[in-house]
Image (cartoon, helix red, strand yellow):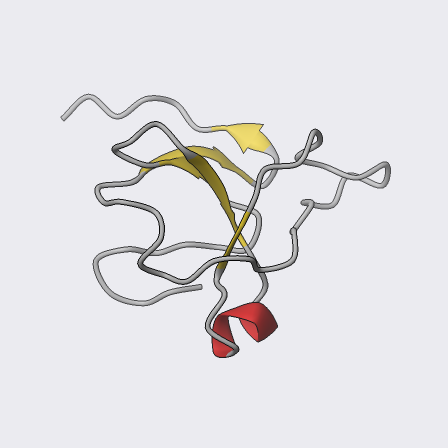
Length: 81
């Protein structure tokens, strides 16, 4: 998980300001500079675990701000602040 103002967990599905979808990759991919992957069809595998794609793009690729859509394979209620 990323510390600071953004807190992303592996498998988090987000939409960026340009309307593109990304999924947070594993901590290993993050260490190699590829913390974001591309969306797959499923958010959970057959055993109910979160699907975490391989990292494909750098931290800067998703254009901020990002909106969290799915965490732990489940939709996140919209924030009304």
